[in-house]
Image 1 (cartoon, one colour):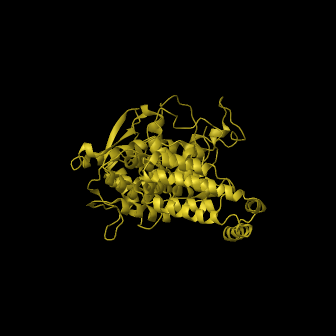
Image 2 (cartoon, one colour):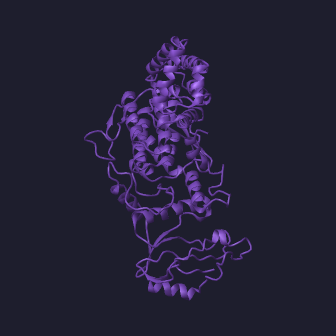
Image 3 (tube, helix red, strand yellow):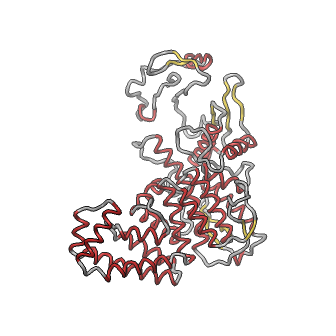
Amino acid sequence: FIWPSGYFAKSDYNVDANGRLLNGREKALVTLEQLMHSNETKTYRHQLTGDDVTEKVLPYNEVLTFVEGIVGIVGICVRSSEIMHLLWALGIRSLLQRALPALGELPLFVHDPERGMRPVGRAAQSKVVHEFLQALHPHAAVADGTVGMPCMPIDTRLLELSVLEQIRFHGAYGLTQDALSSALQGLAMNEASDTSQESSSQLAIPQAEGQRQMLNLCPDAARTILAFGLHQAVLSDNSASAMSLLRLVAPVLFSATTVPNAALSLAGRAGTAPGQLVRSCSSDSRFSDELHRICSRSFSRGVLVAVGSLVALEDFASGRMLPRIVEACHQLEGWLDNSNSFVFRVGSWHELSHHSGAGHDAAFSAFVTKRAVGNRRQFHDELLELERLEEGRDLLHGMQHLRSLISHLHHPCLRLEILQHILGLDSRFDLSAVQAVANLALSIIAEPGSTLRAEDEPILPKDCRATSFLRLEAAACHMQGLVHPEVDAQCAGS
């Protein structure tokens, strides 16, 4: 089946399992000779206006034929040399390698109407990534240009890229799970000369083949990777890359007791060029301050949850959360001491409703009937337990208690503000976002290194009712070791 250039045949929906064309697609078919003539003359008929249009590059050609298995798939062709189009092609190649391993590494070609098919070798592919990174400005979100589709993660293991270039590229665009694991493994091997195995954290990294290798990183190196990668993910508003990096590296900091070691310093300090890291001794305090700065620059819900969960874990593990818990308990105790006064409770309701703009009748009745008193007294008692766990640096039970505490809140106002303050988060984190932060933080330490293995779920979703965009988006998540609902579901607090 051959359709004219620019015709939106959408054959995945309009051809049934028996090969019958649906919804008038048969009437639009053309011959191979007609299609070749259109490509030679660079002319096509606009589907809406019916006018003949001549352009430098035709929109697309849709051809559907029958092949069995991998027969007939010989390479990836792209009809543009633009950076974003070439990255898209590299991502599709990684998708095919993951979905059809027998294909191996498919060659990449640029189709030029005048010079024909030109191969794009590994050196040229590396240059594509380099030029993409060079186009990223220190304070800009992403490089110019887009294909209007999900960023398909790229396997960079065979490209000529440094580890830091790969981490930066992962934050800005996306690496496959295997490529990111391999890059971090390479960094761990470099650190091995300066850091003994006894003083390093060990994290099992799931491999595509189902094997598990041990990643040895000292805590300061892990902090550097997280700060460097998350900084770029925030600039690019890349929630999937932020989530995959967090799941892979954060357990190094929180799954074992480790001895700090000299390692790579945080990126982005004054006098440090973008992408450049220097060696020094990173401190927990500086890392926490850097995380708060990164969080303040986050703007999408997915990135907020990813960075916010790391902020909460770091502040709890370092003890920085303890003074805020004590302060919150004193605040609640002062309110409870005056709560027997009806006038005080009404005044408290008025102040809160005026501040939050949420003065509903139900909230007022809670203050009149003392239900608010009971809720805040229980909340105070739960904070005392959280304080005890924080004093003992019991991170696992602390996160478990925090998640349980949040799950019992329904329509909090003051309690939500207190939780935001305790966790070091701002007002952008509503109740569902705070709950998502607690869920993600707990999953990171309860299931360290838990990412989706290749054999756990097919790379392409089986639900054919989903749109092509959503199926590609799901595949992109799977290629980064994430189940598709994770990025959105974590943000929704599920």
